[in-house]
Image 1 (cartoon, one colour):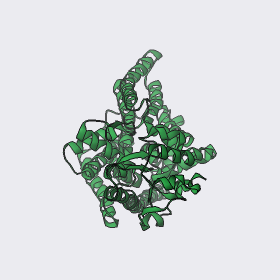
Image 2: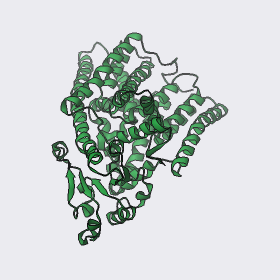
Image 3: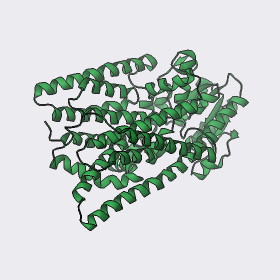
Image 4: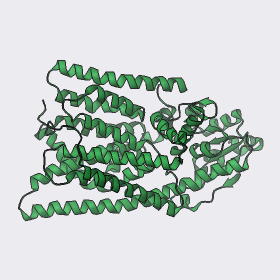
Length: 509
């Protein structure tokens, strides 16, 4: 048995007062971002992909079928379980924004309560420390942004933290842990990576190879039941065991893989350190050191998982847009580990020594200050993100709905808002619901030929993304929104994909 200080953990416990304060604080944190967004432009989502979930969810609730485009089954949702949860709001005839934000708030609160419980598991007595951990998590700007993003990110992060929590209660229910991992795959296929730290936990929690083998088999059984169902579901929808997004995203950003791997990995790691996470770095390093010094081997598995998870994205999908959205699941574990490490370090420093007390109080004050500052910076970033999506994607989709024939075929790169608002047939240039596009996703000449073949009527893109195609076309409509331009982007444009344009010499070149 490991000599981990966590062996006395008897299950997640957080006092009623702490829970009440976390509920109150999380409401304030989430509401603050929403009110800020409303003040800048209006309520919405900070990325177009959120509207993909909404479209699938609405169609599922209204028809009982799984499709993005009417009557066409497609595996364009990375997170089927999250889509199903969203569809409940449509079945109950709730405002889709309200229901989506409620789900995000529940996830943020769940992370705070679970994180507090994990933190309190350590046998280091610091009054009300669990409360402060929970408050850190509900005001950490990445997590608040994710809570109101309309995406599955925070729900998946909560499942990651719950998986960690399951391994702390002795004896561990390994089958339930496997079921939790399998369920997380329904949120993101990345959930299968949780098998790594669980193998560590099995090895260092169970005595003897017979018990270890039994534990591994129980975990694998729980995982297999859910993952087999997930693979069958995707195969039924799209012919592959993984959703179309798995391949489409990698192909679209293939050019970034030419960067040195250490540059890509450093960019992913940097996302964890923007904000209060930077001040938790000493604690993270200290706990990493303690995994060897104090035989906390089960925690080494989670530390390695953070780096392994980020390495996978640096290797296959090295993007950091949307404030490191793909790295956010690791942030939750990093924050909790960092605070546990600071707790251990603080105990070592805690004494009557004047300078030790100054260091501790200075760190606490600096962390609180940075947390608050970045909460406001994050609120501003969130409101700007929402405003860009509303003025570019949503407004364009509504223009298409109002100004094009009902039977028009629209070719678009960003299909979320377009699918939700336009009520038109679509060709997805990103390949999420049009998998035929994936092999030619970066070849503009072949894309042009494909649009001709499919007899597209309109093209809706940011011009700079397809310069070889758009340079020869005159836009019918441009959003002229200043927010996207001020942020260093451009305006979305609508083009008529007419025979004259398709055959022009300039287009062919």
